[in-house]
Image (cartoon, rainbow, N blue to C red):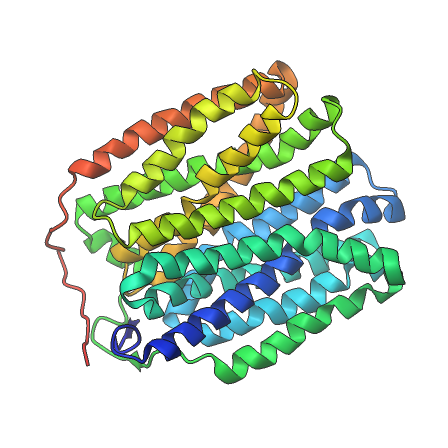
Length: 410
């Protein structure tokens, strides 16, 4: 699907900013609901007397529904009207996830959790595409702001639902759907996406288009995905195992919750800074590479210090790793400018989903070798990927596709 490119530089800056602000709002509210399950797991475990396997199943379903399915929704959003997918996110995630605490059975919890996270998945690719469509000359910063808005919402979701349940009761948890419903009406009224233009190339399937791409572009996409996968492996591993590590070190659980909020928010702020500088340097991949390279020694020192220092290293790792996300999104969109939603989903949903599946094996390794050794070995793998990214520096920027893509300018 092709779009008139009168949506970025040619439109009024105020109009562009309003669309980016709407995307940020939708991303923040949708990810707010996405993290409800973190706070609800202890409540649901007591209510339904869940085993550890059934508790783990909740997080597995969450990862599968809101991550692995993103490329599917990205493809559909590029093929049809992206606006509908942007609206689906806050609406259905708000309705279905807010009802989880009042479900009468674990089976219904699973169904509602799955549907709610499918809605989260549907929103992410087109929302990320907004940064590319309306970012103009500041696409990197725009993607960073949209990415941070989701990080911000996700950081406070679990605290929000827990506070509501503690203050007014579990039966009033459905009231938390109100912000999502209100935002849905705002998005429906004010989101303005570029006009679709039918061309002879519009019927070209994305996967067919990959076959027509120059091999260098495919290699670039592979390297970007590898960097995203490394980043998400670190993120998923640390947020899964470090709370246990810190608890064994004597840190109170409530303080670990605050540490995770700082970890997430500082990473989002790092993404904004990375996006700002990416618009001002030529080789944007160097920012991604730097984030991974700096993180690896911090992971090592994390387990070789005592007191508050490990917490500081943990937070710094979040800053340098999470900050690479918007740059990876921007680079993938540059490779597929006419399929921005699907391109974005490859370095968001598919990457996180693949990392989540890998966690099954990493968990087994951690059982055998311990958390410390497992994460140290993981840091070595991340270092290897960061070094591999050097190959990106030597790839030519100009190449001729086997089949030209058609772009229509106003």
